[in-house]
Length: 68
Image: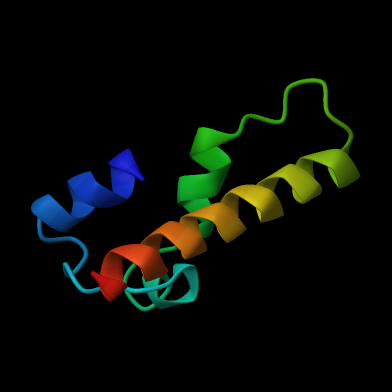
């Protein structure tokens, strides 16, 4: 969320992006999650599961932010 907020303040993303999928209209949104979650010793399946959880939480936070 910090990277997304930074990109909004820098003009890379508009302030009204309201979902994780909407990020893809402007950037490769998967980069945010992959930068935040290193694979480390996780198996590929566990890593994908963790990435999906992070993306779901980012989506929830963006929607909550947009609803304010």
